[in-house]
Amino acid sequence: MSLIRGRLRRIGAISALEVVAVPGGEGPIAAQWLANGGGARYSTAGEGHAHEAPAWRAAGFRRRLSGGKQDMQQLDWYFDFISPYAYLGLMRLGELPDVAITYRPVLFAGLLNHWEQKGPAEIPPKRAWTYRSCTWTASRQGIRFRFPAAHPFNSLPYLRLAIAAGSTADAVHRIFEALWTTAADPADPSLIVELARSLAVDPADVSRQQFKDTLRSATEQAIARGVFGVPTLDVGGELFWGADATDFARAYLADPAILTTAEMQRVAKLPIGVSRIPV
Image (cartoon, rainbow, N blue to C red; front, side, top):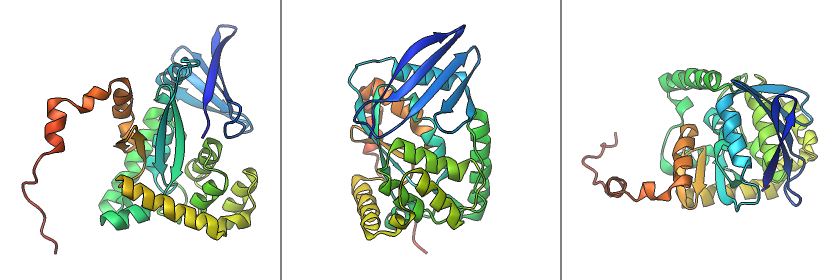
């Protein structure tokens, strides 16, 4: 886990937010948001390139960092690299104000098996819709995005790599970007090797029993918590599921009472009218 703080400075007529890791955090994270009129550019140290981002995301990031020494609320974010929705959700976490996020890798297939569900890619018409919808959503939100060479893919080595690297924000972002911005083949062994080395992890560690057990335990703990899909954000014990739940979570952070209204309490106890008969 890391806490990040920012400071606003002027570069000519452009405002720049410098984001740095707080000592004791998870490692080197450096970035700048350069807001200028209707758009923004984001660059990460070491990447050597910048990403275009819409003004609303820069504004949201600026609001998040403007709190200075205010207390930050601890949130848990459950994810699996197999999910394009998790990648899209990751790109919106910066909109949440004054929070510190713990990244929790889990096996999506384990969640599906427990809750007896099928993933979106396991239903052919839904698979086609999912791929189109994610591609359109990323384009609309100004998120750099390309589906990998094949999907679904085996995400186990990438999840174990994230754990071996400490599940840091830097590691999670690097792995997601390698899988969801380059159209690379996740089954290519060289990809996991290159990622591991970039994260100062021995590629052989990905197969260590320790990290296999950690992932299994983390998935079981998520299920016990009530997590049924990815991405899921745990905000003070309340779960917000999906890439499109960011606005809901942000509203809850601003006013937790939105979940205690009469109608919210009524739907929480709504009786089941009919159940589907198993075939």
